[in-house]
Length: 261
Image (cartoon, rainbow, N blue to C red; front, top):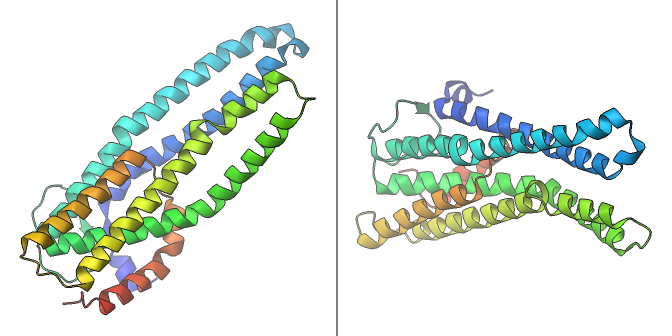
């Protein structure tokens, strides 16, 4: 581990931990609910005690999953993103909007300015798009498998209609298709933000021009809106795996665009 990694401080990351835990809880509850709903379809083969108990457990589990997902979507994730945004602006302009500290989180040598905000946004959008792209490799494979299974089941005449409906509900739920689409859109938007800022710094538009300020602010807003609309937490594990490679790539981009001064 390098000295830079040892000295790196990111107090904002602690706000994402509760949200990440609720994501795992929500995913677990989803599959529990799926199992319970399937068992209801075949409840006639179960003992009478389970026949009367499963519907109540299913309803309770669905309500808990709903509450967990809403807490995450409307409170924990927005709170973490708000604090990250405040910290990002604090770093860009040298104004303390948050008590949480970061050190060596952003890698550019610009003094506090709109130009530094642009560099921070460009770096973040690069990392976000690459992490999302890596996550999509397995996500696309799983979605493809689910869709193939659904098509095979749907085209079969020997499978009960209730089972087909159950599988359709599972495949086209928020935990599978919707999450995949959210991640696809997030990757695309972050990649577009990176490309726009890359072109901006490539043409070296004066940082005091109205066009430069407007371009950077528009890119910053686009970056934040993409995160907010997706409401999707990127994998910390994937980020840590890609971090050394992406850091080298970012350093190369900085050098090519002469962003080291």
